[in-house]
Picture 1 (cartoon, one colour):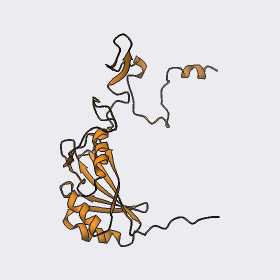
Picture 2: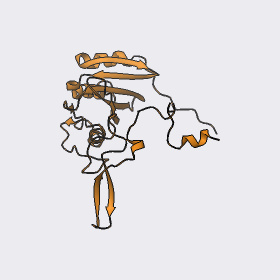
Picture 3: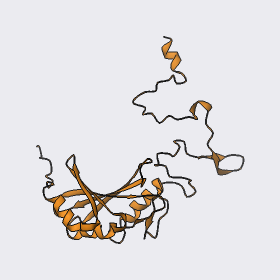
Amino acid sequence: MSHSAPKYAPNKGVAAAVKKALGKNLIAVDEAHGEIAVTVKRDALVPAMIALRDVCEYQQLMEIAGVDWPDHDPRFEVVYCLLSVTKNHRIRVHVWTNEDEPVPSVTGIWPVAGWLEREVFDMYGVTFAGNDDLRRILTDYGFVGHPQRKDFPLTGYVELRYSEEEKRVKYEPVQLAQDFRNFDFMSPWEGADYVLPGDEKGASK
């Protein structure tokens, strides 16, 4: 027995409705690849989200994601994925910020945002004003740095090991072999234009 795929509401009329609901709090509405992305002013995030929930009927917050753009100012993009259960339609809301500019928390609208905001804070260092429980959630309590930043070293700064002599867990600075100290940020799928240690064995066959 075969089943048809679930039907999703089309994007027709959504952009116009969002523009009317958000008014001056809206920066841009973009439609691409069958999805609608809304960019709003950071300081107006809470009233914009309330309008999207109450006027446009996007009742559920499904996810909050962070994006790091090191060469962009502001550097960090925070993306909210909303779902309308009555219209069976999804939308993305984007805000931009820097490390020293907190994003207003939406925990007063959706309590689930507390955990999601903690993930973005932990991974990217973005802070959320109004979140009373903004602690690390994925890394250790004493972790230094934010792993998803594109300038964070792939090896981290410290490593964890158990010392049999001291009978305790110890944090120590990461020590790398000289061959792996420099990282060129090239995609591994593209391949390097230099010979890696051990590659010369295959070339000699």
